[in-house]
Length: 243
Image (cartoon, rainbow, N blue to C red):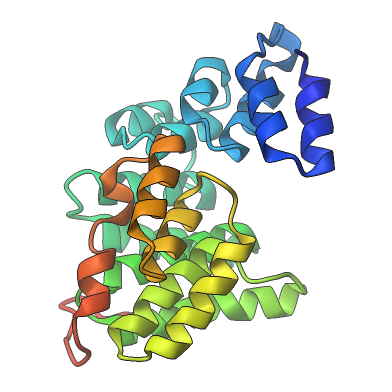
């Protein structure tokens, strides 16, 4: 199998064929970076770790695997710009979680300053996730910025953002709205991705979520707090409200 076979299967929209071709691939050095990116796209982060040299791609794959320490090691020496700041914030959340909120806010500020729409959406998604267990109303306001970015750029709302939004709506008692949002998230999510697992959990399809997570090598840290938050009521106050 070659990288062209993976690309061709993706172009045809045949996920199973793309995945089979990827798993049979031994990319030459000149194609390893592209193969690593495709592996992450297809929800195979272990392959990405084996092939990637780019520190951002490597850190993203390590975070998929729940290895926050390895992700931070990959980011050593990288500048304080939006993309690495966002990865560091996610790593903090997967680790002790202690400074994740402030780091995510910092990543959001950098993304706004740099005009990086993708990083901004990812930053507000993480902030919404962090606020979900303690202050879903603040999380709802935060996630709204990501929806506005999609509107201004003429793009569809990000699947992961929609999945976290669905959990937030459920936590605030809007079960019907949450179901509709989660269905949208599921339709836009990639197989074996954190977005798909979160969307399935929001729809109450826990066994399917477990299967997707296992196939995508996603540990439990990716959905901690989602289930409990959806079952809790509104009216709680976060000790760290967004300004």
